[in-house]
Image (cartoon, rainbow, N blue to C red; front, side, top):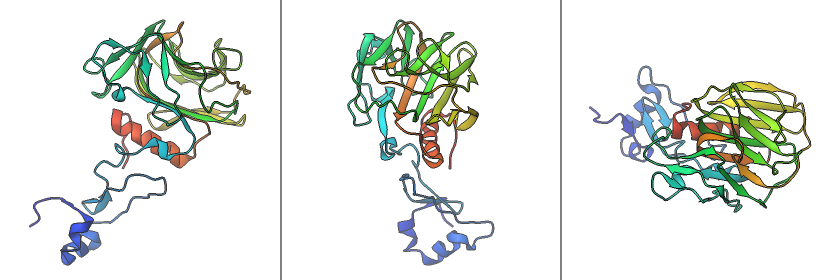
Length: 279
């Protein structure tokens, strides 16, 4: 009798009969193998006849997807609970670290999301990079964030400063939506966002032809962008006039990701924050 329900592929070569049985000859045991075309982690284990990875999504590296220009994760901040965040390092490799105008607050043991740290933006808190690397005026882009609202409205990310051509991802009292400019020129579409809600959200835009909003690994709204023609400028996390969120992680790619890559990023975030479950 096997004492464990998990067998490694390497161990099976020493147990040929067990290997044959586990790979499909046991009643009700159907083998399946993970697709690694998206550079997903491939740790080997066998549970009930299906090959899975022990840390399949927790160990996924979003930078394996091309075009990552900005990536911040609260868990990488090394400081004490309840202290001010004066700088948040960019993990994308482009060097787009953001620094405080008015500092938000780091929480690692309270106010967490799925027991993982967050940075709380309230009042006039904002983090900025005045001259970000890799910022273009392309109408295409993909933004992913895990956050909880803690007041009626807030800006998640503003790309291109706060002028008339800025790209702005925000939530308000009732919706989360992409907009153009800091006066809220709606791009469409929007998604309901009540105060206190925690979600993994995404905005995917392909040129001036298609835009979608996603929440917790699923499409919730889509359409043709009402406006386009973005500009370049500063990179702002939150906005000094509209702060109100607990932010755990944020990623920005400078292109509209493929369906497969969107799934990979959402499964990675879902595994970390409990927003969605992927095999």
